Amino acid sequence: MSFTSDELQRYARHIVLREVGGPGQQKLKAARVLCIGAGGLGSPALMYLAAAGVGTLGCVDDDVVSLSNLQRQILHDTQAVGEAKVKSAARSLARINPTISFQGHEARLDAGNASGLIDAYDLILDGSDNFTTRYLVNATCVALGTPLISAAMSQWEGQISLYDPVRDLPCYACVFPEAPAEGLAPSCSEAGIMGALAGVMGAMMAGEAIKWITGAGEGLGGRMLIHDALYGENRSMALKRDPGCHVCGAGGAL
Image (tube, rainbow, N blue to C red; front, side, top):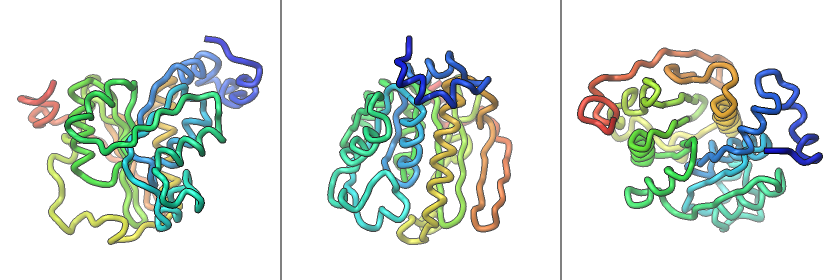
C-alpha cells in the first residue's frame, strides 16, 4: 500500500516516529474502526483517527444534534443543530481528511443489527452513554473476537480500558458484571459534565486505537486508566479476567 505525495506530507509527523514509521502508517490506512456514538467521546476520537489516516471510519448513532450537545461534542457546530449526527460527522471529518472513507450508520445499535455492524470492523470504540448499549457492544465483541476500547465519563472524571478476552484480557463484563442501581450512575444531563473532559477521554480512545493498530508501545489491556480532571490526577488499576464471567468465561460466548 503506497502513499501519495500529499499523504506523505499529511502523515509526516507519524512516519518519523520510530514506533509508527511507514509500516505503521500503512496499517492505519488499512484499518477499519467503528465508533459507537458521535457524541462527547466519539467526537474527538473520530476527529483524531481521521487526522491520523485510519482508512475506514464508521460510526453508529441515531441521534440528532442539539444545542446542549455543543458544549462538548466538538464534531458538530451550531449550523448542525437538528441534523443527524452521522451526517454532521461525515461533513466535519471530510474537512479534516478527505482521503479517508467514512461510513455513517444512522441507526440505534440493538440486538438485531449489532453483529452485522461490528463484524465489518477490526476495532470497536464504545463512546455510548448507557449501560444497555455498553453491555450489548461488549457481548457482541466477545462473540466475534473483536477488541473493544471503552470509555466513560461523568462530571470531572473519566475512565478507559481495552477489553479483548481472545488475548486473555478481561471483557467489559469481567470488570462491570452488572449495571449499577438506578441513581448511582446519573446521566450527563442529570449530573453535569465538564466539556473539555470529553476531549481528554476521546483523545485517549484515539491514542489507544492508534497504538493497537500500529503495535506501538503498551496499551491499556488489563489496566483501567482513571482521569480526574478536577484535581489533575491520573491513576491506573490492574484488571483481571474473571473465569466465571457470564459473557467471556464459563458458560459465556468464549
